Length: 550
Image 1 (cartoon, helix red, strand yellow):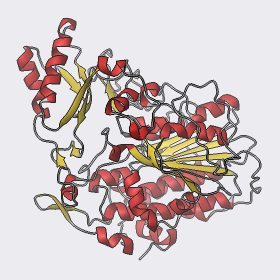
Image 2 (cartoon, helix red, strand yellow; image 1 turned 180 degrees about the vertical axis):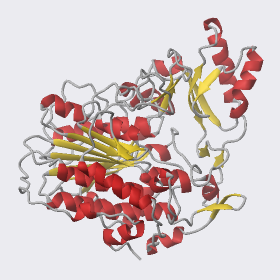
Image 3 (cartoon, helix red, strand yellow; image 1 turned 90 degrees about the vertical axis):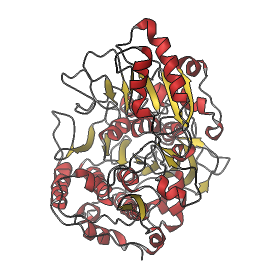
Image 4 (cartoon, one colour; image 1 turned 120 degrees about the vertical axis):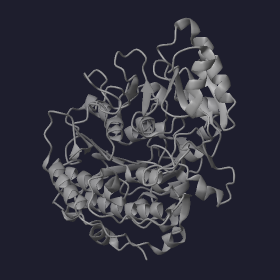
């Protein structure tokens, strides 16, 4: 069966959803004026692959967006397909190398604190800060967002960013956001010293009520039944049959790794539209929404099981009712929806579905630093890295005169691993010009170069072979699958634009997420001619005699 509108879903999730039932009198939208509200939505880990897989069954919000301008092959063109770099491209028009956001974390050997790892949304200048215990800050983003540029033109423009992750809220909202909310220890929170609006207080009360309640299993729609198959991932452990039932919990991840997490975020976004009268002033407002549950579910259960099918069906319904709420207020708005990255399904399921080369990471990386220290006679740690792929840094304890030797030896060791595709050194990367070729034709070096920032990126970059899951041992309920690679299953995402009266068309050729900001700027008549960007305006008008790009 299909989901019977949002009421059924809300009952199953034990969460009030009264926000979508509220409607207020508002002036009718005028099509001749630029949109007064930009709604920019990022669905974390919504790959082009799973969007295409479930597309024929959408009948709610996704279906509405598919009646507008559709780019099924959007690209997060760079190499580090993670949450922070991906979100940083969407509303800046800048590749991560220009934006300075080269990963969810990077290393800074110049900091005086013991933890040299920097979290992308932390303020490292705060005393006692670490990459795991930090004060949220927008300071690591080196380029302006669409919201920052709107505020440059008019301080009357309201910039609101709400997400299931702090790093998504920060990278979408930018430094000038008036309101920014993300999950904290006691519900949605914001920067210290700022008051929480009534909308945030209400949703936090609802979240607390939901957490102490039993959550019944969600129904499995008929089109999801074929995915309801158990996949063994360890002794006595399976995924592929979980439908998000649980008892009372204090573990926020149980809520976030279910449709309930996105429900909370969308309720809050809807209430903020009402409370702040977004889209009803004389200037254009921005509402950025980061929906994180698809990512948590992809990590916990993989991307091609019943869990993902149920999640996307639920999200389709929730988005539809969210757009209905905007319609009820008579707002002249434009919607853009995309993703920060894609994702790779767990290898245990891939192997059974005609992908025999899919595998988990073999041993070798866990002893790399120890072997390197022995070979060089240096004291460990010699290298610093956040994962077995991506950026690797020579530790600050290594004498300057021996750094080149350490890099050469490390590259030789890593290159010998059978699941390593290639290791790229800093000089080779910097010698490469950032390409303007269509993203589907980028070389791997092109992808690495677009992600490279000389002051934040590593001394060398490791790329694993395709279809290698860099999780040697799965952690059920948390991490069984992941993303982050240079390969297209992690790079390709849908990009959708819709506004009232939009004419439908679909362009299957590759475009990039850095094209989104200049496209939205053109739709709202925002001059960005003095802003250095990597993207281009996409023409959303199918009639060649008319174009939105100026």
